[in-house]
Image (cartoon, rainbow, N blue to C red):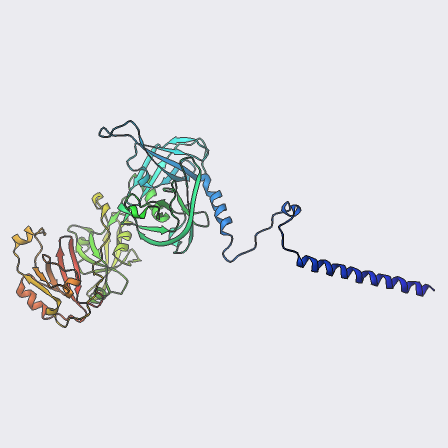
Length: 486
């Protein structure tokens, strides 16, 4: 009897488990057929759950956190200029932008174009407090300005990052404050490294896809680590077509310029005393220089450090202070960062041989701070027919006297033959040679007369182009005529 009772109980238990399994299965099937709805009130009030991990991360949260950390250091800058006697009306002119704190004691960095020519500069902090800048130091060439205010308490500062680590495609954020102290930002990527706009064309700037909003000019360009990798600057002052295009002064240039401004009040740049030109593939072959490397010297200034070190036109500068020179613009940037009065090793290629020299850097004169960027030497159009002799180059020359040289605007020390004619659509025309230029050298042979010119041309093969050293109204340059890369 007891065994039967136990059997009945076990049977009922098994039936209960089976019934529960059926109910659970039915509930799951019912839930699967329901449309997906939003979270319940209880779920919304529950603990935050980290968003699912994505391939590129949650950029929105990343940029939000970036702005939250940096904004306390962003200030509004108001550059005020009083009207001159020639202007009518009592109103002052205000140029608004941003800046950022780099020293808790009140040192602020911004763009020099923002404060250039200002009579007074007012700085407003995020809490609305205002301070007049005690000191304004600027360097227009690098577009960097250093402001100093006297805050009541220490201010949160932003760190400068290493702009050399930034690459095309890296994400960046441009931050600033508008006239009402509201934060403003744009995000994008590093597009390229280009010559700076206007007077900054001698420096390399970042161009970004982060278009500038009102207020972001002079503010910081940040990487995703919260470090300043540039100062936002606009090109609209110099070219209306570039309005709102994002440019930024790289932070390494900012640090170098601002440190000199704080220590000396000015930025002292080094110089060698040479003018150079880009190296085309044909010129690289002519001078036995590696392709895509080096700057070709076309002039050595008298009494310059380069002249003292015995540099010559035709030398190819490949290294300065251990840094490989990429091209003539890069050489300019490298030499400007040399300390005047200090000796540096310089590697050159002369007649195919590598030569090591020591050059004591000079100080760049103030009037040379606006030196234009090097221009392209070789025109883009090529000729389909390759010349077989020097006569096929389409170049005619004539004798020229010292008086004619002087009347043409050349230096009295220029000696050579003057170009009298250039045939249309000829290799000489494609190389940019023009009537009135003076040819001083063919290959390595100086030519001071038509007779010497004719004798020298007979020894020149034009298979790889004929190398001429010519004087132009803009200065001397090397030209390879009849080369494949014209």
